[in-house]
Amino acid sequence: MTTTRRSLLQASLALPAAAMLPRAAGAAAPFNVGFVYVAPIGDAGWTFQHELGRKALVAALGDSVKTSFVENVPEEGADAERVIRKLATDGNGLIFTTSFGFMEPTLKVAKQFPKVKFEHCTGYKRAANLATYSARFYEGRYLTGLIAGRMTKSNVIGYVAAFPIPEVVQGINAVLLAARTVNPNVTIKVVFVSSWFDPGKERAAADTLISQGADVVMHHTDSSAVVQGAEEKGVWSFGYDSDMLRFGPKTNLTSVTMHWGDYYIERTKAAIAGTWKSGDVWGGLKTGMVKLGPLNAAVPDAVKAEVAAVQAKIEAGTLVPFAGPIKDQKGAMKVAAGKSLSDGEILGMDWFAEGVQGKLG
Image (tube, rainbow, N blue to C red; front, side, top):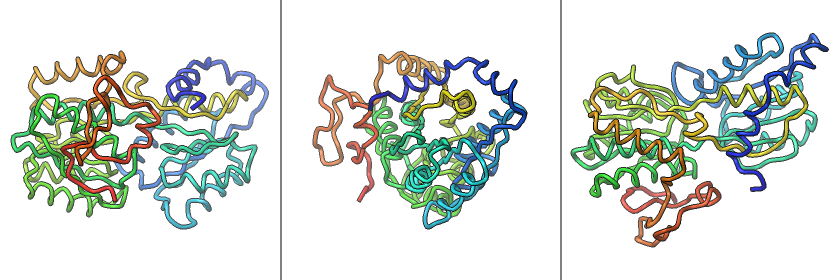
């Protein structure tokens, strides 16, 4: 990549607040910004966090912007393309599409509307008027793996996953690698549910994993079903996207949370000021795009201190989650001792680490 995700994020966040003043002084009409969501907004999860980001944008820029959104848009079929095109024809100057499966329709519509700026979350295809952005989810996952390794008694972690794509695989491997730094006997059992948001399937998958011996469960799906199921079964859980402690006050140990507001504010400012440029942003713990939610009181103080120390090292760049030696499920060396994966290799991750029980094919 000619511009790294992190450097572009830092550059965008460096835009002065005054960047939008010339337009504010010379134009009464607000700048229109559209959002496309893959699931219902609900009260927690992936789409809920993007909606919080949209609300932060409105709060920050006030009457200078007008936002709109369409929720629960399927990735399959023609719906996504239709929705994105409608937002473009409705006069939105900047459109955020917030799920991996929106990549191709976003690219197609972007070519048809070269004067409109598009941003696609978790994708990798760009154009002059199409940028991409995502978060280093795996950094937060690494911290939860550390906690899970300390808290498990059965040494089995259950993982409810949406699809076998790199974004999801990174997190699974990061949990396993971190857990094994403190507990070499840990294994992870994975169930794919082939959906980002299906509470029924997510809950059924969690129940299956618990019946197979998992005493810690986590998920890369969009609802709180796994956390709620774990609370009912009395096993530890980790939430995702949002703080989910309220759904499992006794057993939810913490959540990996996403925060998009600062990014949406600064990219909109850039679009208004005429300084917006296409690129690729990948924010993590250091930039605040990824955060660990509040830790449950059940987590021992020593483990809390351990997590804080590891997080500080990740943010400083002195601890790299995907540093070797790392073997895959078949025992083949994927990362040699003294080496670590590049961003490109992480973004293309299509293998499970040794200790993960599940199939990608």
